[in-house]
Length: 269
Image (cartoon, rainbow, N blue to C red; front, top):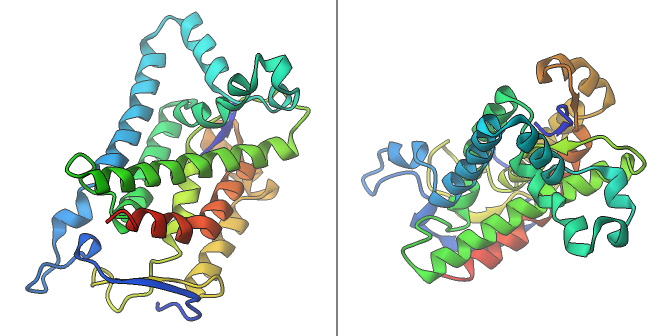
């Protein structure tokens, strides 16, 4: 989960459709049996993101204490600093960079493991659905993987902006990948749970915003990401605050924009 200094079915109501059957995200072999390798193995782009997060954590864990602290402060996002504008931050790029870099910094091992686990769980089906497998095997797959990465990073950035909006005068440090992870969950519920069997063939159809899976998961996210829930779950974050605002911002951005990114990614094929 994001830390503020972590300190921190069928779906009725499908409203959009596009594309036809595509074997790249079917989980059954031609004979009908489940292809277990498609369930376990994450696409390369998801592994790259997870690897970058783990590498950043390892660097900070083994770097001198002062270096680790300065790195965290530089990569993490401080709402009051962001709200002070480009001039106070040394330019637009320096002001905006933490919207992305905070996603690669984690406050502790439990924080890292939780975000990495859910990144793999949610990112794998979303990346496959976007045809982002095998990014180094063709230019089309590389473009689709780039679109997946863009979607993930924007979810995290919007989550950070939601956090800033409610803490604009605070010097709390926001770190963690879960704004992006919750965005992947938002994308996932736009197409998951609308097939006849859990690992059966899928059509390139989307769950509408009023579909039961979307409403159910959205209610779950709202009920578990609010001030009361954050206070109750805070001990699980090592006593640090849970940035529920970033979770909500990332989730709703992913939920609302995912169909656009999927269509764009699949258009490269």
